[in-house]
Length: 263
Length: 251
Image (tube, rainbow over all chains, first blue to last red; front, side, top):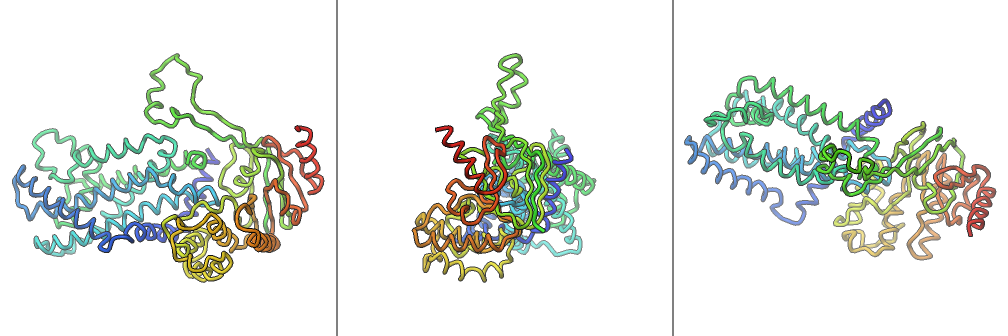
């Protein structure tokens, strides 16, 4: 146990010391991924925008309400949710893909995992252009309370970082976790208030109240679209973010010394 | 000051069967009570068995031994790529490896970008990495190929590029696995010269080999490994003699 703590914390210290490299690698990946198409990442933003339009049209049809209220809600929901699900799906292969770099020379594993989170933060942040378009279109007025997106985003990124660490360390050992996680992400998008408003639930309110995603979505989305957060959303999100981080670091500590044999 | 210190280091390699790699078969395992409970589908291979050695600056060590004797595993353990199952290892000084050099290259990226990426991995800043490009292109004799993706390269070009990048940095501790496999005769001469130069500049060098040509030139100390143990540790010529004797005895 002492050895496990020593090895993993040395790894984390080194990862943080070499954070510029994690940024460089994230940026390099994005450049590579979009180098072949001219409009590149904007193509993804456009497709997210189209999806959000279609879904808000259906949701207002089902539950009533105004389209100009629903569109920014659904769009920000999709952006935040795809940050979470995309990060976790990519976490499944992070270490396995980086095998060539990890087995040839001493290299901190945490750095590779952090690079996955950073890459997804950059991709998601750039979808905000789609949001700004919509915000201007539906007339969301800038307000000082929008500054709350900073702590909101911090909480979401912290929680996702923890989960990404846990998933990235377990998938090399259990190779069938990836389809499972992909499936959970698909179901999660329906069970969490990504497309629909929590208050529009008539019964089974537990799926909102007991779902950690609800609070994480809320603390980032509400300030973005200039609405009030749900009661207790902030305190719940803080607790959830800390628990996720703890789970992530715990998994890393327990698996770090065996990871080189698993990947 | 560069040094390596290993005290009764043992390393077990877990080898997993298909079932052991599946999450679903792991959760239903407790349900299959009584039936083949010994079958864990997981095998432990003892790759290193209580290895004790120490090396300090100035040492030029050749690791000698047949295939599967544990030479590469020992190098990876010294490098910190593997951590021991039991025992203690102390490392001092910056460590660099020349192990599997061609791994970690991005197939769809140009040679130029690969140089920058690999150099950044090795600890250079982007500016330092870009400054290295011309020298590496020149040494690897890649010419205009440098701006084409790596996947268009021949095997020889790949190894020349990988070798040139990996040998662009000095270190206190240099851990080398027999690397001069590919490339034409002219390049091998050039590469050997460059390698000898790096070895001269490094504080402490461990070189795993069974070709014995490079090690003949540089090693003063030899460690002969057999079945994950150190069978002999002493002057280089005596270690080679011990290795030769054991291969002849087997034949």
